Figure 1 (cartoon, rainbow, N blue to C red):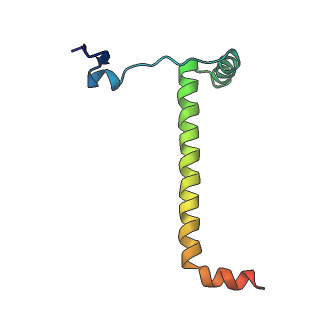
Figure 2 (figure 1 turned 45 degrees about the vertical axis):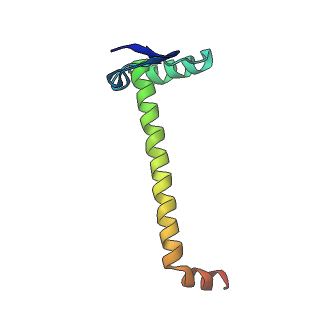
Length: 86
């Protein structure tokens, strides 16, 4: 149920899961979204979702690469030090 606690609205938990959101953009962003949608033959909504998914995947890959580098630099520290002194 909706309600108020003091001056703060109490919003039920179900409202936050699966509900739509409004995306406010500048005209430039809207134009870019429209171009993406046109190029891919999809709706603007789908273009935004795909762009978010691509960005999330790219960041995830970057994090995986950095974690692998950190592991390798510890495991092969001695060899890397020798290579650096050649």
